[in-house]
Length: 208
Image (cartoon, rainbow, N blue to C red):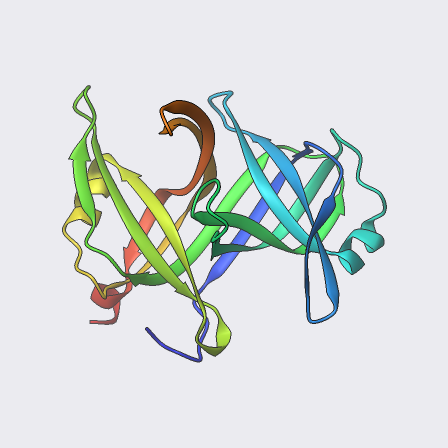
């Protein structure tokens, strides 16, 4: 990976707040807050994404009430949950801008990064081809976010032929998916987040 240089990580969302912002964490003296954003897909299904914003940004846009329409622009961020409960990889959207305004639901994501594990190509019970992969997206100063991505059909077959270390650029959406995990013999409802790939460019092939 290219330490010191940042990959592309840009997301734009429009949806409705699922609840009021609540305290998330403090970093270098800055308070951050978290709230859920609900976004409808064309199919009618709904994604519920976690938005993290600094207190100063929330103060600029005024109080957010449940059900309020907002546009969010920022980056997708990940961190490892080490407290032993819930998903180990936590994925959220770090807000750079936040605007209360009406509009159509929107979920557009652009990423570039490095394929850091061998892609996993498989088929659904109905015979549809799927490929799962992990993209390492550099932030500045050597840190990186590790984003699970899923591709379908012909895009899945292209992804399945790629090698670890390849540099990719893709566009798609960040989506949520509910699933049930058995913990100590009991079912536990959880939510996974992944990037659904809509288009893909192998930057190594392009530069070659």
